[in-house]
Length: 265
Image 1 (tube, helix red, strand yellow):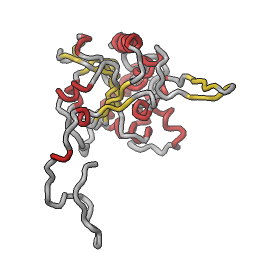
Image 2 (cartoon, helix red, strand yellow; image 1 turned 30 degrees about the vertical axis):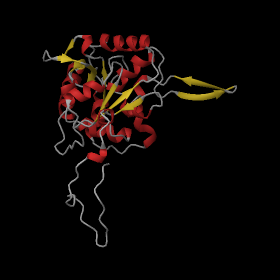
Image 3 (cartoon, helix red, strand yellow; image 1 turned 135 degrees about the vertical axis):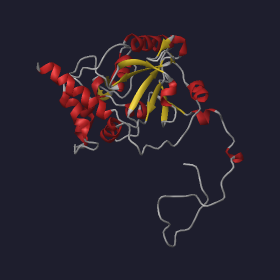
């Protein structure tokens, strides 16, 4: 009796957390063809989500990124739940581990993280690991783990925030996206952000538990490079056409403040 009740409340919380935030703003728009042209199998696509759970994860990780998906490419022959060609594999809070189309994240702020040192053989192992995980579902029996995200900015000390990212009962079916991807890379011992100690003049790497990884870790990892589609096109910034009018701003113009030419951030 208790277990079905927990599942019921868990699903209610999931529906609430998955609702979008109305004031989300995208600072970039990368056409699908340009985004796909820059992606390679093995890449991790970070996403700044617009859901209620996204704001909580961004707060807890002190990062822009709230979601991560693994790029397997179209050659993997996957289809999303609508039957469209899928090039991503991700862990979704509602559907568990699924294949997803790149179109799902058009209009979102994204970042491509590439495991620059990985061998082709290890990359294939990681991709197969992720693909074989499709169908795993999130274990919602621990409703408390979900309820913690009902507060967009829970009053949690910084040192405890990372541990709050680990969802579920500790089983391999955890739904947090970065957990799945971290397990896949750890299967070939490719480093993300290992703990490092020095012993007898040698650096010893210690594997961090996969449940403690967050999307931000792929961004700051020294073993992943950042790929930006706009830069890959090598545009001539000297040819950019700038609006000569004063840019609009939500902040009032301070008296005595000197105006400068608009610039790209």
